[in-house]
Image (cartoon, one colour):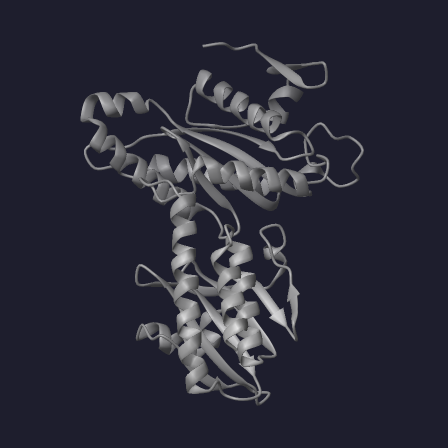
Length: 352
């Protein structure tokens, strides 16, 4: 028992990735209690409803791989379907137990972050967990929570709480590696389906218009407050499986998953409108410009460069608008020339 516990502790503390840390903890718990199933479930809100979605899962000793590219394939469940867990969270409890409809014993363990239950563990087995085992479990979960917080801290921007540039580089490289060649752009003429209907992955660069004026007129402390408010609007405008990053200064990046071009455009337009309509204390209103592109089999540098070019076009042609790179190229408003199949130089018909 002690040897197994030490092995699992070494495995837990050696992880530098949220998903691998989840897999390590459910593997340790499954072996310790002999559970038939252990899951880590994200808890998030959609409108006024609290929802859950599995992010790591082990059943009968087999790990079911759930990562960022496949999470959307698993159905969301309303939290209210589990009243015992709802009650546990309401009283900020450490755990709750119940017997499921099939007679299995279920142990719920909320994962707390700043007094908010952001996730929970579901441990299912034929018998209740012994008190002595529960005590050891608490120790393992304390280490797990601490490492989750440390990983989260290293991945986030200290001002806004959004994911940071370093995290973007890691996640975006993985996302591009998993993407298929771009068949969702307007330039495609071979698809039978309309390009607006084809689901794909999208990257958008968001820049606050005239942000230097905010800092010059009100000072950098107020500028920071504006960045925090914009970050909050970004969070509330996208789904839990999408990712929002602060790229630096007043620039943000969004990775949008598994939606059509029409839906991606709608989501980015909604964000633009939400920011334009929001009242900022002292300042009143601000606007943002957005450039976006489909994520294809191109290199991350090229994809990001395309989004930047669409953003530059938006800012040079009136600001407060959303521009799609492929559409600009198709219209002849942007031109790209490939040199040696690696470097692309961009030419803008509408400078300044």
